Image 1: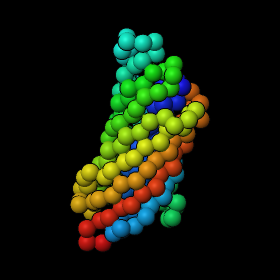
Image 2: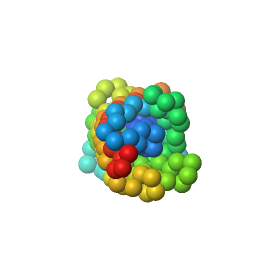
Image 3: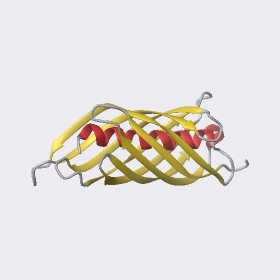
Image 4: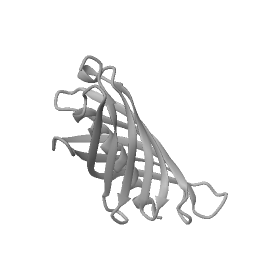
Length: 166
């Protein structure tokens, strides 16, 4: 599995999580999003213990669409990956930040691993919000599918979100 595919998938996942937080801010509501992600920066270092083993830090931009309302949102994601590029085995984790049109922000964490060719799967958790998202809670799962090396990834996100006072 190539680095670009891995990065694209991870970026998409983070973006989807960000979008879900912004558009589904209702107490105990189920959320569902789909979107795309593309990498904006990539730094890779060879580990040296076995051929293909690298550590990567990368950032991505994501665009998500709420399956229920059709609303769109944009996120920025920063990830770290520990992966063997030859075998495709590894892990990814990171943080995502979504900002709505009023400047209110949602921060989330995520982690995942490859589960098939060009397919990554993982979980996310909302950890902080500002403005109307202060006190946000929620978590869910994500799936990311690479469309090819250097191409954007397609993302699907599902979970639960809860906003105090709503």
